[in-house]
Length: 107
Image (tube, rainbow, N blue to C red; front, side, top):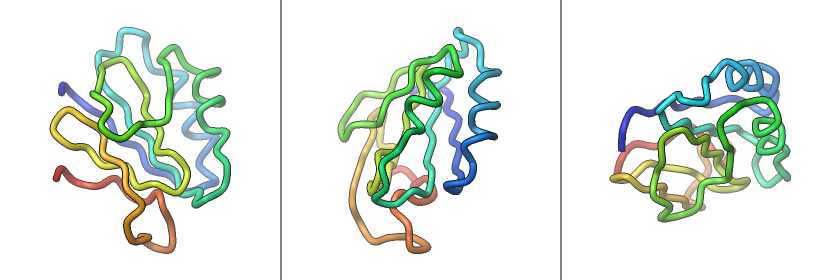
C-alpha cells in the first residue's frame, strides 16, 4: 500500500467533499478513503464523488486489495478500517452513535 488520504465528515459534509474530490488529479497516485456519518441511511455520496472527480469512487468491500488512484467510501452502517493492503469492514459497536465512524487503525 502506498500513500493514503483519509477524510471523515458528518452527513452535512457533502459540499466540502465535492470540492476536495474536484481538485484531485487523475494521476494522484494515492488511495483516498472517505468515511461519512450516515448510519443506515442510503448513501448518494458515491454518485456525487464519481461525477465530480477524475478518480473512480466505489464502496469499499471487505478484503478488497487497496489500489492507488481510487476513492473508497465506507458503505452505510459499516466501519471501514485499513489492514495490511486490504480494506476491512465490520458492524462493530457504534462510535458516537454512528456506523460508519472515524477511520480505524490498522489491525
